[in-house]
Length: 384
Image (cartoon, rainbow, N blue to C red):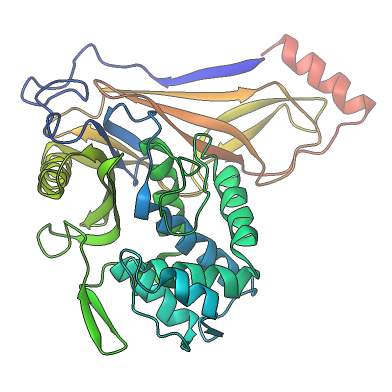
């Protein structure tokens, strides 16, 4: 069964009237981006969403997954930024004049580092294909890696049929909610690579200078990257993030009908998120959050601790008591239990916002009890 242990009751108070609820028409951008979501990555809480589970064609936003796969391969020792790849004649013929590109010459020998910058900063279609072919042997092999990583991350409504988002008759699709999962993974697993390759104002390659078309860099405080996308079918989309005072928000806007309206939607939504909400600490990493019951163990329970800092996001002026915390786990646990095992989740419900969950892990190991210890535990249970 699922054990649900409430830690803190929610106050009857609700968020102040001056703060718009996520589904309130007062949330900015409703007429600018039919698809939208805004999430505070520090708490994991969703601040608003509009049709966030509707599938759409991501276009060049696809390249964020290509970059994520490359970062993962670098960490696994299967790829190095210093690797050099040669542009295949067939690749040059197909991609030298297709959409956004880094203008790779037909006989270029280009490093992975340069390819990653070109993909992140100027949305290089040609660079994405050269990277896929060089690192995985073929585009099809690279797509297998992309879709495997999507499944691993839990992007249940996404599929990738191209490394760069070029039109492929709808084989590539995603949702705003899935893109937030991807954004969280790339900034938390690979913060140093993210800082190196994302957020640049532009890129100069082959003597050609190009600007980054990210609508927030240079105009929104703390904005440090991600990707735009456009197709005639899907309209204009954007996956973006910004950080202020250590607090990071990630947002998706999609299906805008012009790039100006996409920019306006992104600007309004991110500023609304920073101005109307604040994040506060609940539990420090390593602190005990609660207990889980253990059967047939040397101990009758095991402490559950926070593997990382746990925060909650509140409307500005909201009260700390306006939160309900509940531990969920399938229990009672059966001994033996390993230390550091992820066996529970803490559900955070802030008044006026959708609930979110964060993992909890076991603080210590609990060995299986012998016959005598089980007898003692049984007697103890009668009197407690």
